[in-house]
Image 1 (tube, helix red, strand yellow):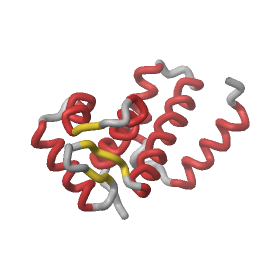
Image 2 (cartoon, helix red, strand yellow; image 1 turned 180 degrees about the horizontal axis):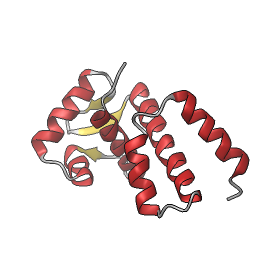
Image 3 (tube, one colour; image 1 turned 135 degrees about the vertical axis):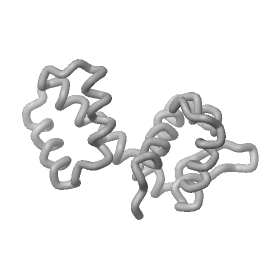
Image 4 (cartoon, one colour; image 1 turned 60 degrees about the vertical axis):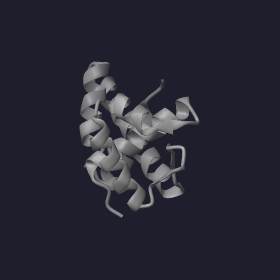
Length: 124
């Protein structure tokens, strides 16, 4: 299933918020991403329709198994790419911002090669 870049950003945000608290609400997602309530509501509706999140009657959001897997994949790409860029001498802020853009478009083949290179050569 193809998830658009914006959907991936929502999934990643929900994953990170859920690591801080068991209870994630739409308002938390909106605040974290800086988006309006209507924008968040629409995006969450799309993710729910795709079976990537569930929203309970009280409004709490949880990632489904496929949603969690997708979110973890995107987050791993973000962290690995950020680390590679920092090793190249890029500032933490710029490395993270650039990784955020690239994480959605890089092929699995290229990402796996980068990840393997990092595993071999990063001593931190």
